[in-house]
Length: 292
Image (tube, rainbow, N blue to C red; front, side):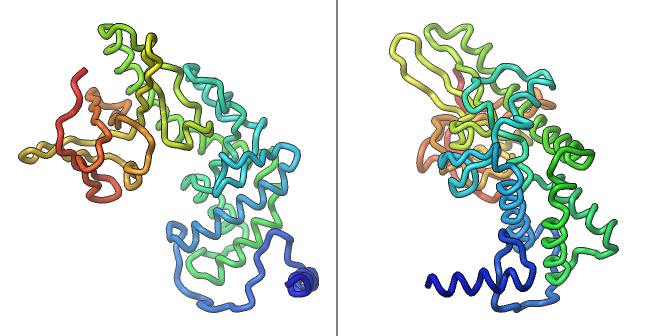
């Protein structure tokens, strides 16, 4: 096995393949149609961006296994989410985990992905619509890694696009937080702790904020999702949201549906067997929203 790895590394050097590229001994599916929202493209894009950032930001890399994709860690201490959101006026965070960089979101942010693809297509004249062009795009990102991902006008644009989309989600969360803060004015002995900053351990677990009983120390954990619409169907309550396909896996006590541009806020208890995920954006509850 050791000799095999040595041979693969030697072949990579001969082919001028960079160390973070995965050598495939089988080409397969060459020229297959593809688009930048497909699972095949996003998987390759995420893997490549992760490897590039790990290479470029060695001195700012945290290997904390509670963070990053598959516990692989990520960039810390530079272009932090905490500081960038603070510049936009969001200051009500628990500082724990405030060193997490916005760069760690580049691999999954669709606006960042589209912008980088646009740069590639403009520079090369290629249209990224098949697997052959995908391979060329991946190599192009490696070759231009410094120009794209180190300080400069391109990185500034990527940061702004990413933080703006993150900011909109945070406004939804703050709407929910403020809603509960007002409710607690009339409920003694309960207080809200600071919101979880994006990238912190609690945020990655799906806990957006926590309510604590002052005397007993009992905690109630909340996750916020965007609110689009609530429809009563017989004894059921169907909520239209966004990307809620895995909410049943989150270690929280309550789901809060809130959007900054809508007045209504609805809170449902996370009770096993009492709700059904109908599709990636729709969940149906058997019990009515909580009235505190």
